Length: 355
Image 1 (tube, one colour):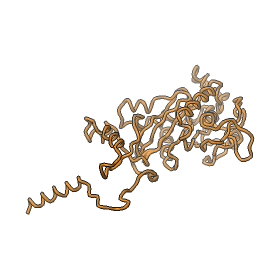
Image 2 (cartoon, one colour; image 1 turned 60 degrees about the horizontal axis):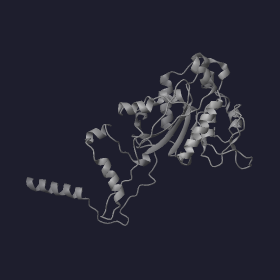
Image 3 (tube, rainbow, N blue to C red; image 1 turned 90 degrees about the vertical axis):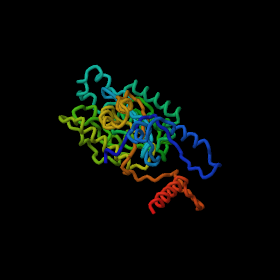
Image 4 (cartoon, helix red, strand yellow; image 1 turned 120 degrees about the vertical axis):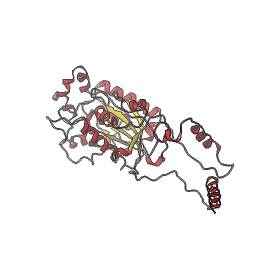
């Protein structure tokens, strides 16, 4: 169910809960949980979305989003739930953005077919790369998903790829030198996460030549280490010269993409995509949140902006099992909780009053 996925604000945390079996149980986790429980909110308030929500960690994924600019931008914050954390990144400045910002009709120009990054765009990529390494994010990413357009793939490998490539028989480059006339050195795939090209997260399809892709065989030459196996057609059969996708169609494709993410085993994923795609997709989320959180989810992305969020699956669509849960009672022993004992005593008292 598409409605089963929820996006919440980045004002959340991961909490390990311990059931105290004795006075020797660790105190710091209990203190942290207690601090969260001191609130004037009622249980009904919390259940309706007015307060913090609590979900099993293994039902979550973290996404880190990077979106390319096409007149506006979009990104996602981070939360907890039946979730996958993910990072969204909008691509850096493309050549189409420069003229398109001055005159939107420039987006109709064939000169911007599959637009590449500008010199400024590559500077934006370099700065974001420094950030993801400085904050430790680069080491946590298990998979990089990219839209199969030149500007998004340049951004993806520039931010999350390895260092400069040196000719080796056993390691393919993520990007060959001067790919898309970028005047940049080749980028290595060594010590980088896998990269996967996915058509579902492409920009608005149709009419604008900048959103039409090249053949996959051309891309495989330019980006040898990116996995294009999920793309069925070598030529771009999705883009139509005279038919532009409606906003509703983009949003539906985006929700299909979000549901597809649940088929992935990776827990922390970076997504490099486009502003229009993210804007229309993310507008479907956050309706059960505070208006300010909804605004945070749906606001436009800047070029090469990165936002981290967690998607929550409330429908049990995900099949991941927990890697940290522990069943307890090993070795087994008597462990009747006091609240259950209280319930039994109340039932006995009630039953004895009836006889």
